[in-house]
Image (cartoon, rainbow, N blue to C red; front, side, top):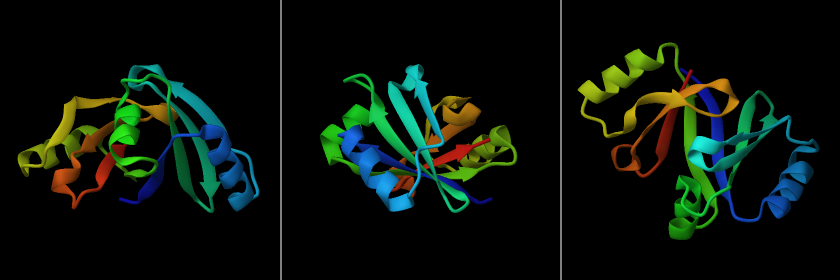
Length: 129
């Protein structure tokens, strides 16, 4: 298993894009709307790892609620999975609080699920395949 990407919730996408363009000396290589989650994602290549900027597109989306509660910043760490269904079953049986009814479609053409941060030292953790 390896780190797939780091998700960062942003309030002002234009200011954040400018910061990360300067930081990495590059444009995002992919922008994608995930309508089911009310989010627009912007992916930067950070030397083999990815940084995903998360912009809320609806006022009631998970990202909008996160921003209202915690403000901008680290939203989640995502790890690649070899078998998303097996990881869901393994973590469920181990007693982790998994968010949702099972893996679902996410950004970047991936199947994803999240582990609640109360079970992972306060860090929302995503598995993706």
